[in-house]
Length: 378
Ligand SMILES: C[S@@+](CC[C@H](N)C(=O)[O-])C[C@H]1O[C@@H](n2cnc3c(N)ncnc32)[C@H](O)[C@@H]1O
Image (cartoon, rainbow, N blue to C red; front, side, top):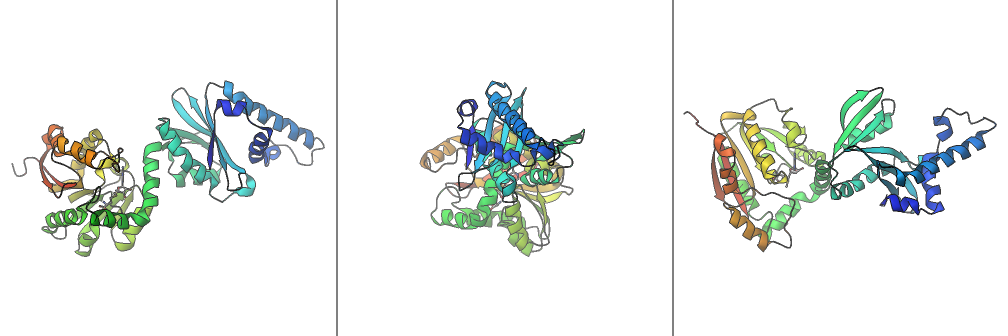
């Protein structure tokens, strides 16, 4: 479990906690600083180093850049991994990520990072930076597998950045992947938010697409592949984009010859090389704000054939008023973080300069949007 040590926690730390904290950093400290273990003064060197470390820890409450220390305890309540968050000007930097040498390769460094994300989000930290020495292969591997993006390399140090919100979302979808299809079926069977009408929506979507056989489909937020699989089986060429690797793995197992792009919607814009007959967002665009949705849908024109169509299936309504009523009806289970598309908001947005838009209610909860480039053939 993660523990957060703020300025006051550090001021009042027990000696036992300090000893445990130091024990995580202790291993190999003398060697790291270039001392020989057979040095006759090694014990004194050790004591001096320990005193320096503890003095540093105790100085943190007075350090203006200090935000908090993260400490991770294993099931035996032993501190196994630590790191601290510092803020230099407006930049949050993760420093001193260290795992006790006896607990390497047990996933604790990943655990502390996973568990710190909701705390960062709560405290409105949008992104964190981290600097790793080019020789530290273990740390490079950890950063990259966790989703840190390399920004630059300077003086033998790699600068990484991690976006908090998208990473949290990715972890959530990775976790959900195994039960996603079951949860959809359950919500649909109960005719309730959020997946009420899912099969009918899927049918309506496929009906539009299947009218033009063997075309190219870009499935944005492909998930487990629920929408694309029947099209793949019919011979359509499928490209699936998703930020969750676990979701993609499931989709890939059912569509081995499809193309997959493991990236966020924003990142994939640099990676997509083709133009598509159909671009589908099924239950995926609501993870963006309305402003981001509009921006992304306009950007998607670069990947849409002239006579192509964008299909958006989601929890949706024709009017803002109906969306408000839906939210009230499902208040107890409503997900405040989602921004479900509403037809009248799309009509009032910049989208209407670029697209002809249609909307169809599937049921009370669900709707289908169809966007086509303006002036086709005109
Ligand atoms: C609710 S699922 C829908 C999956 C599928 N389209 C379906 O109809 O069953 C949403 C999917 O969108 C992906 N997703 C959410 N936000 C994303 C983003 N910003 N970039 C890329 N994928 C995203 C999630 O990982 C997840 O697989």
